[in-house]
Amino acid sequence: MKLTLGCAAAGALVALLATTAQAADPWRQVGTDARTGVSGLADEGAGTALVVHDNKRSGQPRLSRLSYGTEPVTVTPLAWEGAEPVDLEAIEAIPGTPGEYLAVAARGIVYRVRITGTTAKVVEYTPLPAIGAGDDYESFALVARDGRFAALWADRGEGADRPATLYAAPLTFAAWGEPKFGAVTRRAYTSPYPRSDGTRHISDLTVTDSGRILAGSASDAGDDGPFDSAVSAIGQVSLSATGRVRVALAPTPTVLGTFPGYKVEAVECLPGTGDALLGTDDENHGGHVRTAPYCA
Image (cartoon, rainbow, N blue to C red):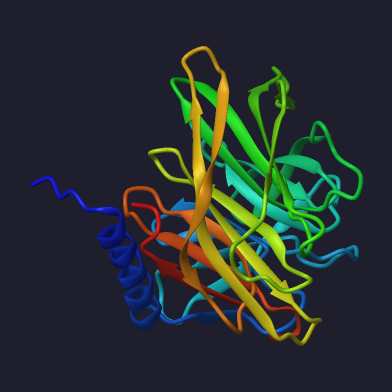
């Protein structure tokens, strides 16, 4: 049966689903201090995901495996082999290449890593293209179609005077594994929630199977909070058969859920479920995860 909703009814349904999800699926703690928060997520399947941490000192954990399908959840740090990143903020699986991922640091360095058991080995690393003055990246997402790829990432922005800048580009890989980016397009974006002076308008990105772009947004008043955040549907991305990337931002983003007291920095659509896995980096209060039905 096909269900058709008018705009008002659709908005009410989205609000109801968001409210129900927040009531039905509570946050579960996965870290207890500033070194163990969730800065980015990449689903591995079977109830596990990779988590990146925004640590900056040598020897601190960069990557862990999260078992969110268990009770309680468990987190296992992975060994990192190769160039050690500073401030990892996002990670994304490379479609069609099991065990390989792209992880992005705040200043725009992309690391291609291969996961074998409990070890992550750096295959290659390269800067993002078109890095802007003062850019600070917390997000990265991939789109795949018929063997072609596109990448989306964003400068997070800050407050009313600096909207986020959403970047998009075709993506290929050199024979030795290095990511290669094509022509870059840019779109400015201001989140509808939260709206404090320190709001990071895009704290993470994920893309649904239909090409809908979901974004986290977050604010904090320091390492002890208070925190606030939301997940919104902000537009649509498409990748043509010729590899052309088109991004259309919605005139009015749809807020799918708000999370006072938490700083959402990771949003990951879980394949085949319609759910998003959300993660928080609550600084001195650690990190939390939960699911919400945002990716249908």
